[in-house]
Image (tube, rainbow, N blue to C red; front, side, top):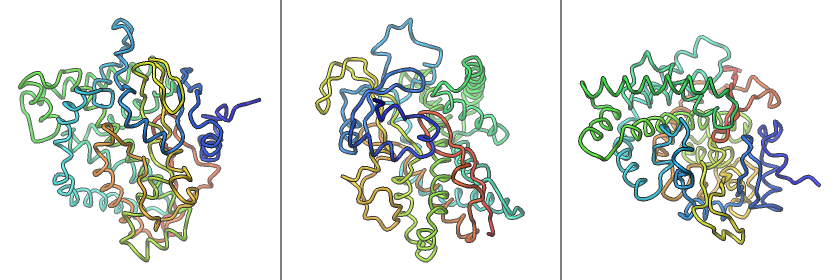
Length: 398
């Protein structure tokens, strides 16, 4: 008899994973599954189990502790960041990057984010139909993160390619040689950028990180590459899908959108609900059992891979009443869209600010917008990190 987990990662599942998650939570809440790349992993789907796993430091993030040095592959240069670090390295790396994400700095960015959003919405005005991913959800966060990093305007398109490669490569969908070529180009670009900044530093984040590296042993060159690559993914890719999914969810639930238009102060609540309902980060990044452990009555061996389904946890009826219903007036409950524990998303306040400005401004400017694609024709992105559509065609004045 086929297991429920056998339906994972199929095309119908990617389009709508929630019925499968519902079954897994009931029948196989913690089960071993085969991932698209052939690896086996423990798959966690219930909210309470997910929360416990995210906080359990017996699950390690630095996989290098489990393998011999000669087995390390080419891409470890991009893995030297806080996402794949355990204590105490994690505290050091997060502390360095967190200087760019203080509440005061985020609040201070509101005016600039509004300015960028207004410009992008102005550019849509001459079109009857737009792809909102291309026109708004993608360019807004890439402009913001490139400005924070000090990346010249003319190089932003390169970063689009590289960030897609970093994401799409996670499930083996890309030819190895192609990925290596793109990563070579990416690292070469960063090397040149770091050299420029060392001679002529500015006020941007890369300058601050390079100066830190030059002043002592706080940041190695490898860690510099890793931190910048993480900021591109975490500071950009996830926000693209947060904005895209939120606009799509609201257009698919017109009664909720009307409620938001009548009560614009519900925007914060609406965003938290869309994050819960169809979050932009489908799964936690990889964790491994650092030792033989017993977790929720499951015996896990040292080195076992563990994946937490954040979107399944956010649909757990034990935690959220009527989880399959989008309700922007829902009483606040702690969803796991940004993770929890020491690896909770550092950029969450920035993502929330970008989402709030982009979504409220879009519907204020284009109150009659409507989807220009059927649900069946939506093409979902592949990969084991983000959840979002490749294109979201919208009629602006339906």
